[in-house]
Amino acid sequence: PLSKLPNVGLTIFTEMSQLALQENAINLGQGFPDYPMDKQLIGLVNQAMLDGNNQYAHSNGIPLIRQKLAQKVADLYHSNIDPDTQITITPGGTYAIYTALTSFLQKDDEVILFEPAYDCYVPIIELNGAKPVYIQLQAPEYAIDWQEVRSKITNRTKAIIINSPQNPTGSVLSKQDIQELIAVTEGTDIIVISDEVYEHLIFDDLQHESILKYPELLKRGFACFSFGKTYNCTGWKLGYAISAPELMAEFRKVHQFNCFSSFTPTQVALARFLDNKAAYLELGKKMQAKRDFLQNALKNAPFKPLTSHGSYFHCYEYQGGLKETGIDLAKKITAQYKVATIPVSAFYHDGGAPNQILRFCFCKQDTTLEEAGRRLSIFN
Ligand code: PMP
Ligand code: GLN
Image 1 (tube, rainbow, N blue to C red):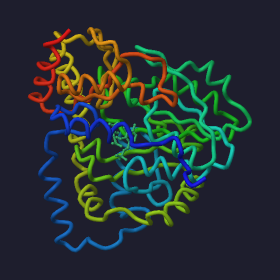
Image 2: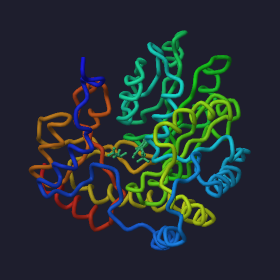
Image 3: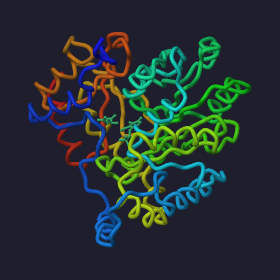
């Protein structure tokens, strides 16, 4: 067969963003801020280019940014990371996840993941000839049933993918979840892929449980990050992976023949900007205010909020008169009420159980959120 991904079409993000454009709708679908990023950081990129940082960077990332990240990890997670052997800068968080999985997956390996799940995991698993093993999280808390995880582990299980704060549900893993994860992976060769791109977007006084805090997990895990989410620049596509030296050596074998290195000017700029701790430490509070602002804007709309403790997203259950479910509902609301969202059905391999849960992205200007609320409040 010609296609390696016969069941894959356009991603839901492309589809809904295109529809939003076509319908002239407010786009609360795809996760990206509609407000400007920090001008000082833009100035630093400009300066980096003028200073001549325009050739290939070191394949692992420029040394200064890796040193600054190791310092950040020491400050936040009290973990000693060697910038030379344990950090690799990548063109985005997706690429970090792709490379981590591709470094290890063999044909017919099994990878456990939790649905609803961010959409890139399954295609990466399948491109490697491995098999996704699904565990369903239940609304409204979307917590992990660790007993079920235990029951799904076989001698083929090569990896488990966790994502906290989670896309699309905004659920957050607790210390107890991490202890369970340690217990189920202890004494096995299972690799933990920890998607932590929303590490700073955490609310309600919860603490982010990075696997970097836990040596038992770091020795068998990859933590994957994205600068796009932290600095309001999703279009920069710059991220990084952190792992144990032996695992990172394998990661780098794949990375050096895939893109070899990442965009140099943004690395130089971010390395200089990373000393500004307020930029990331205050992010959770700001984003929490946006979550609450959207919820207030929707208070007269037929949407019941589920629980979101983090990320850019909040899922709502539609409670109005339309009968459609899943993508049909999201499309109908986009066309009729000019607000685009993402159907949570898109985060299940089989579309999930038919329901009317939609994911709203709230990293938008208050005026955008207010107008979306106004449009959605006029119908029932
Ligand atoms: N993981 C999750 C859960 C995401 O939501 C996203 C994207 N928004 C990514 C990874 C990818 O990040 P990047 O755009 O840096 O590739
Ligand atoms: N992560 C973003 C979201 O969940 C989308 C990224 C993309 O468009 N691939 O909305």
